[in-house]
Length: 360
Image (cartoon, rainbow, N blue to C red):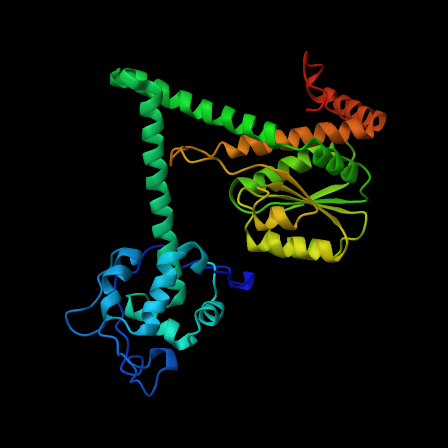
């Protein structure tokens, strides 16, 4: 099933939790066969009759139990959601209706019939349910992995358990770094460094969470090499800055998921104006596929604890540092001169610090 990218999900900021108060469809919404689309003709839904009101539990199990009381069109929608919930939550009501061959009002009636306030509410609940399911899967895999690794030693003291937890944080970081080092393609790294070294302007983009902070770190690494670099972490200024890029400029994107709509649209603008687009993200994501060069950093495998900071940040930092090092190597003596001048400027503030790296 394929949905257009225009249907990507964007929730109002005031939606923060499940709405457990069910809204029953009005009489006009519970239409007769003469008022509904052809896909609905033949069977009127019993889902909202007294005694059959859906509860406020999870959506997917609810759809399975309500299937017998649905119309043909509603069954069609329910089966599609059950088969591909991750695709459905990225669809707009228009694209979902077109893909299913039903009318948009039919989709909206279905949402209310299963206890949701509307299409966005249905998608929001599905996303929360899918996120919880993934967290439970991760927890199960983590427990299996831990049992296999510790064996009988798992019966040790609480202090030993705490020590293992600390080791797991370290181990997942090392795993992420090793995996990224093994999958990073040097040809792509060198091409990126060469493009940045000769660029008239480099603009770095990241949004939300750690990606915005990492975008600032790219700026921190490059400006000291005398690279004309700017960083933008706001969706509006990202679009504005991309619109004034030109051939010979570089747009560099940092993203953990490679999916934020703002970054995808900014990349499209940057490419339209012929800037070279580089992405530090997973190559199998929209951002990774659309960029001219993708420096691959895969999402961390299952097994990372829910409360643990994602070790992917360290992998991204490794790629950023590796890229900055390569840019300095391409620049050669001008990079050495810039770093020496910069180090000399801060020596006035704290004196000469033994063993201080020249790049910091």
